[in-house]
Length: 77
Image 1 (cartoon, rainbow, N blue to C red):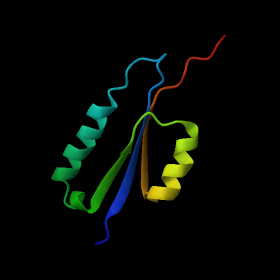
Image 2: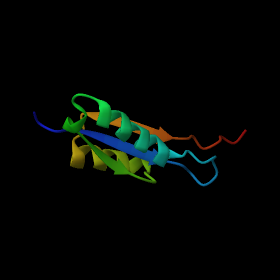
Image 3: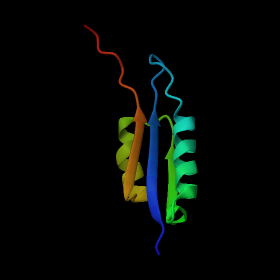
Image 4: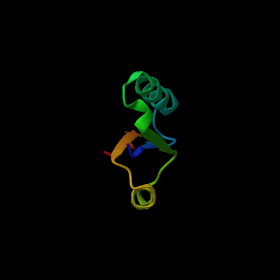
């Protein structure tokens, strides 16, 4: 079976609460280890992504699955 790629993107602007994205990707890896076809999935991580990084990563990595861990910047009211 060909290896599938999951692209894990994390974005956490300085002005926002911490995401703990490292814990999140670790939980994903742990769950996959116990899954019957978990070894068929490769996780590629990108940290501190900016909007332009998304298109580049999609073209370069060609993932089948994209997981985004992000927080929105508070809007000015």
